[in-house]
Length: 322
Ligand SMILES: Cc1cc2nc3c(=O)[nH]c(=O)nc-3n(C[C@H](O)[C@H](O)[C@H](O)COP(=O)(O)OP(=O)(O)OC[C@H]3O[C@@H](n4cnc5c(N)ncnc54)[C@H](O)[C@@H]3O)c2cc1C
Image (cartoon, rainbow, N blue to C red; front, side):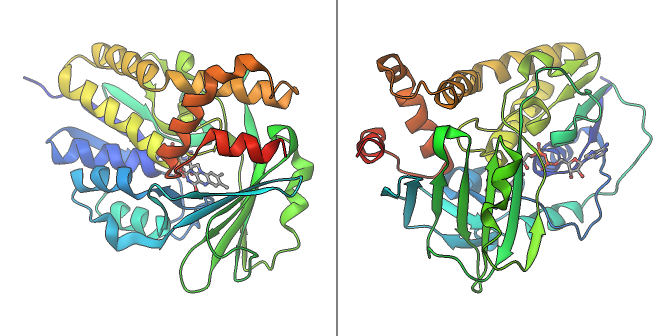
């Protein structure tokens, strides 16, 4: 049997994970990225340790070695000043630059390769699948800082659900403070923090599963919108989508069949992102406190828990309507 040749374009978190999964299973896989090796990744570096660790173990990485800070209590706040605390369900920050650098060092990059299946793992840029109408991206800006107001994880949700400001602890007295919003003007809200380093990029906040493949090109990760429309969590969801593609490639030797199977799995596993996206749009158009929104309750709780926050909607609503 001739093995399918796979070319991964983009070695962010999802491309790196997929590369390792395929390589370690004996597939004919090559990979390529345009990024400088010392590039500081624009991200708050937060993830759910309990879910991330098993994925990393599958590719022979001990995730404990990369953890920077383990949260105990997460504070969420609204612009009305109300604050509410939730216990952690595994929320940590980790050394994302170090992890990706270590993974990258195992790879010899190739630019020109003939492939039966091309994977677009280029994140926000969708360089191979192409841009589309109806995409939804938010602005972000983030500082590496040595001074914040809160010592543990902190979220400040902006009115009308247009985005949020975060303070996430790293190690050695450092923190990330950042803001993501649908409005560019909100970005200056972090300007009062001390800035050691500045970063940022647009983030895709809408699933694009209906435009996740063209011919023999198929997307994983943020290129197809595996980012929570509620929290912007994209690290684990992007790895999860890479795992779905790995499984489809392992199951089907024909590239077209593998793509078909993957798209089916993607739609099933992440169908709640469409619903969460609807919910956020309702909040943004002033329709938060509608009784019909109760149908989103379990999805919101599930999505927060996935990120590592032991969230309770009842508690949050009580604080919100105080
Ligand atoms: C400010 C900010 C904070 C965030 N914080 C968090 C967080 O705390 N937790 C969380 O879970 N998620 C967070 N996210 C989201 C998360 O970082 C992304 O969703 C996730 O990295 C997506 O992974 P990916 O592999 O799809 O893409 P990426 O990790 O973005 O990787 C894409 C790769 O493709 C490469 N590339 C681009 N164009 C080309 C090309 N033409 N050819 C080859 N390579 C190319 C890039 O160099 C890059 O290496 C944050 C995002 C932002 C912007």
